[in-house]
Image (cartoon, rainbow, N blue to C red; front, top):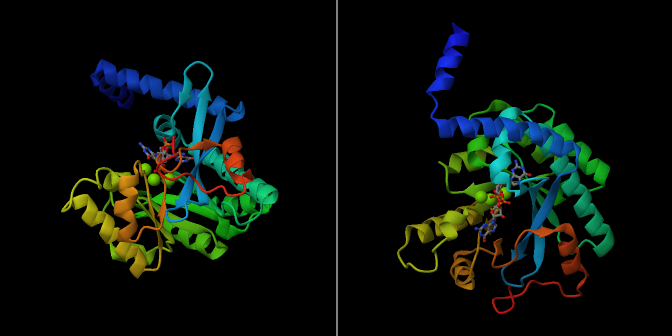
Length: 291
Ligand code: C2E
Ligand code: MG
Ligand code: MG
Ligand code: MG
């Protein structure tokens, strides 16, 4: 009966949806090969001090160079990797690669430049009992101090899971920094912020978009509230997805000292980051010279 049920529900899917499922299954298989055949690589998006325009850190963002389809963005394959469980080895690779890269930059250009690397971690990875061990091993093998690694998690992935809470506390004890990504988009409470050993709030791009036009804008109110909450709890706040100088002007007085976005810098290949670091004063261009 179960088999029949399966068949029946399969045939109920609309053709487009079936195609989407077939596509997911295909991508899932290919992703497995991608990991083994070095088709994945990381780009690094600078996180910038809004006053000095200096790089304080970078977020590692995974990319897939598919042999036929070209570049596939993470939004397309991370969900597939999460469903198939491949996110666990994939995420481990990202973590190790990002730690090695930051250590290489440190050795080459000194410690003042680009202090932290951020790595996005999916709920499924945090739920793995061995995750803290993987992080510790990645740091040790790279020779990187724990406080130079920022683990980025979303609020939804840390809600309602005992193992996850346990892992976050283990990571905190290890000395790793914890950032709440896409902050403001989910139900968040002060209670949650106090229960989790959080260090950084990353204001979601949706509150930065259009922040420059309205005076009594809801987005502006949320951006302000998040900055205040961060200040009250002594957390760092990073504004994400900054696309214009006008947005910087709005965010700075709210208390945002750190920002990330195409206006400041796009995600860059590791070699491009190195080019920024060799320049004696590598602060990123202001409004006039940003491409
Ligand atoms: P995220 O962690 O919130 O990363 C920020 C995303 O916003 C990146 O997209 C970045 O390229 C984009 N972005 C940054 N500044 C701007 C801007 O000014 N304008 C616009 N329009 N976009 C901007 P990307 O690289 O496509 O990554 C999308 C999402 O995929 C990430 O969102 C993250 O949730 C996930 N992701 C990326 N790499 C990894 C990874 O290694 N592991 C896991 N688990 N997830 C990852
Ligand atoms: Mg992120
Ligand atoms: Mg984000
Ligand atoms: Mg986001």
